[in-house]
Image (tube, rainbow over all chains, first blue to last red; front, side, top):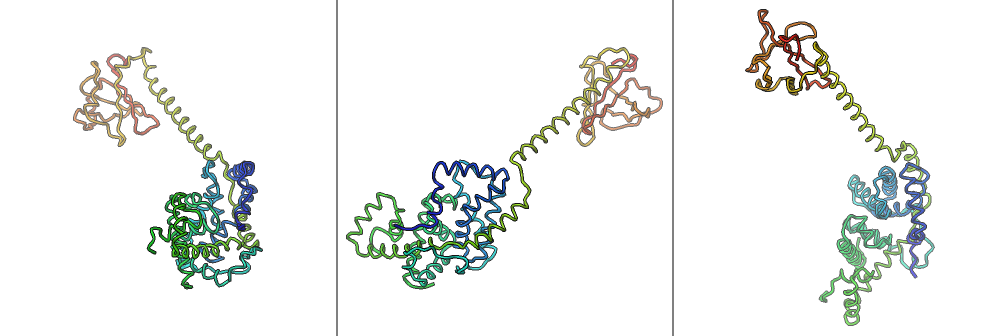
Length: 196
Length: 213
């Protein structure tokens, strides 16, 4: 059985009870309750920071982006359509903020791993892959076009469904399928050649 | 790759993203096509490495750093109540209503004033010529200056009542001419000023009949 840390961490959000509870928290946060917003922050901070890091490649940029995402979320929470799921809305904001930030930085991202920033969960499967392989894959990810990178990060690393990725990227599902298939093929080729 | 299945099909197949019907066909094809099987194994391998990233967790220190900065900023932001927008809309509507009511009441008072003149009789409304000035302060066409009521004279002489000075008269051609002292005004023009500078109401008073309208 494959361990999916982020998905496991998100488990429990899907039940009706949890959704109802979250809806109440959301209402309070929209009304300006900072403690309710803090609960939303605690629930999504890991995912937002992780996605930002995957998209931008730098710890400092990722932290700036995550901060901006939550500040924007707080500012525009009243605009959120409560009939829709919250997470794709937040992911869309994350992708947009990262896009804006990478345009500002104007330099090609190079994912760097600071041991203080990320740590591997105790997963026996994780040890099967050498650090060299992972480094190559990190670089391969950064070589991908922005849209493809965002699609594959959300779909294959964060474990969102194709529909959720489409919602987050503001694209259609066929477009997302095309982006992720292109990205997978390119990554496979890059790893095979051992380049990047 | 010379098969009818592309690399992209296989890349979607390995993660279950391919349409079910096509996936079933591809599954059958993989049994017989070695090249496709190799490609599938390759993609699965790279996907496994990619998914190993799911085990990488952002450290708690990095999270709390971001959290503290966000909460610090958020606590500085003034709380905007949900009903804030409605209060502004309501206040705007009330302001418009009050101003409108004021204008209506004021114009009602000013139009009633001439009716309290000598005789005390209310003038029939069809005998009251009302001239409206345009937005630029210039009265419209000269034809519009000429009252259409049967009792109205063709030439209008006017006088400003408030200060007793003579008032320029409007000729039929639309020119303004100062009245000569020898002119005896047959009619008096009452100029009513409203709050709206673009609206000026003129009353023509027939002085032959002792000011009765």
